[in-house]
Length: 464
Image (cartoon, rainbow, N blue to C red; front, side, top):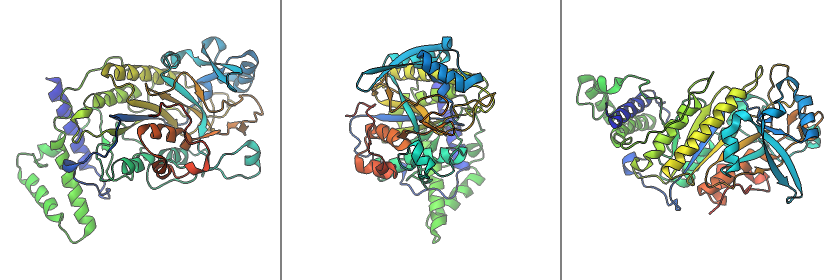
């Protein structure tokens, strides 16, 4: 079967299935057919957020290699410590180049190490949820902490809503849509993972979901549903009811009916979306993966990016959400997880370069939290501060940004063997969203807690 026809058919299946299961309490958004793109300037840009769900053990991904520092690391990490011979070295200069610190990425992260050397990858050191900047003394003396610290669901929600103090009603990407597209853009927020996505909620329009091809039968059109269904008694009744209810006196019912019709109409607006979609090689399925493999999710993002100009209105800004599960390593090391992350990032960056848009797409990681410095024999427990990774051609890569913590017993950078973040998640995310095109006032609305931190731009993006 022709690939373009297959892609179109599979997309229609997914879109219709999403419409059939949509919540009746959907946000109000304008007609997709009359979408007007905002003045975004500077050409197309996209953000790809990869949530490392479960809390990534970054202390086994970035390891100090100087003799004394490595000895301290091994002493506190014990059974989960990475062998010194299994590290790929790199160096980092701090204090204006006066001191050079030596680190290593584990050998399973060879693609990320290569990208770092090519200045296409950067490490954001010890970032996390913070109400205000704090030190160990501040914490001991009762300084405010993020709500429900160490809780998976709450900490992940804080990251997704972009506020280290309180869980917001809207995700930060939902607020970003309002900043970039005041009359709504149903193609701004796109997810290829149907799980745990608060980040893109609450905007003017619902997140647009893409799933694996063929995950559900084409029940809508087969039963005669949809504006282009070709008839069918049940489909005719279905459409007539919603058309009539759009003018109902009950506002909730009228909005619900209008949104249902707009969702069904999307199959017409997007029926040619995947015409000309590119094929990409090298995306793996990983091993012992939980849920949809990261490589397959990023392959789908690459395919969508390859037809970005086929979206109605050709929106100049888009945000993609990708979820990589399985990082809650209480009883294991994250060796295979970091390997699949590295391979997937390397393959995705190669796909962006093949399309010639590596300077227009920035990929970055987030996670619930880091892990404890000490081992629990088999693995590590819930921590706080964590390193993050940013990738792309618009990056000042090949460097560490922020303050690297000391990894040893009784570290002044840790509380109860949990790293205290020295960079807030708002500072980290705001630097990326500023490159995306948001002005200072918009950044304040997108990240309500940002004003509590002096540094708003960490300097790792090539700002226009």
